Length: 396
Image 1 (cartoon, rainbow, N blue to C red):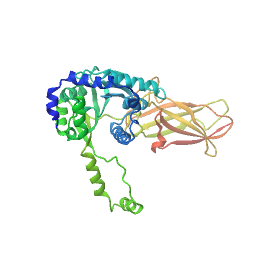
Image 2: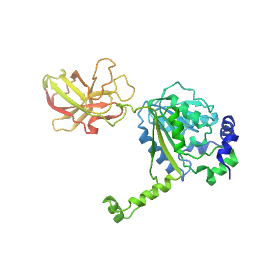
Image 3: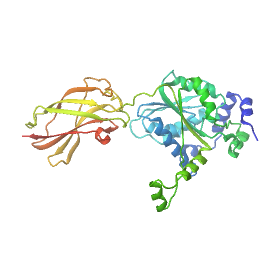
Image 4: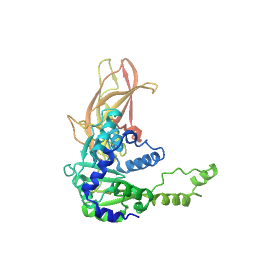
């Protein structure tokens, strides 16, 4: 039985880096790694469920800077890029990062998403400026690290105030499992146990201020129809599910380290977007070719900051939908209006802004103008339950 603590003492960071590089450099084919997370039909469900679980807590938004720590061949980096994040894929193996670049080349990201960056890690210092990263993602990589104290200090250094580092790792007895013993014996790789209390003591000293752990069971719990009804009525299953969850969590740890106080969300995220809209029309009747004019007041009644029009993702504008007199939609994107002049400024929760709007006149007829706010590329506020304003108008 290999004692992982002794192995950590015996191997230098440089030796571990070389071991990782040798593994990828000696691959005869890259196809398996290029297919991740869909390379292994047994492994895929757990990878995807764990990844989705981490995403929910990270509260990512398009344009956020994310460090994919120990990215390997970059399957998670690729998914983060598709979500619109500015991703830096970091790994000690240059060959692994080359495989990741090949993944991006073969599997083109859809849409106008930020270009990823690929950064080689020497095992000691992350070559990024202080407080330059919004989020850190570390999937099945931290348990391979020998110098955890130094790495956590680097994570805290590059993470912005209010940022979060997320980890999905094996459990506290990982090193004694048959697979871990095999990997350490055959490849001289660290397969460390994940003791979250010890990690938290080190992380707190490094500058992190809070830790949260996730508990869940990614397995499907199949019930009969009667059992399902009993479960929904609160009369069965609770302890059975809890037992299954505890059994799973014996071998898994998903935890989140926060640096500083959480910041307000902004309009790159759907949650927290709501408004109060008041519209005073100069006249509800106009002639063809002459615009409707209105004085508009909007109040941020939600919990998110509204980004200005200069933002790449999530700027908040007022939009109008054009409906027929029967209430049926004619044009969902009939017009857009800036809340503030020029590039504008972020609108804070509770803040009110007022502006003048000129709405082009449709052809002769009777219509309904529906006023709503929209976070561009995110959602219309009405989809969050925010009230809209509808005004009947006539063009003569």
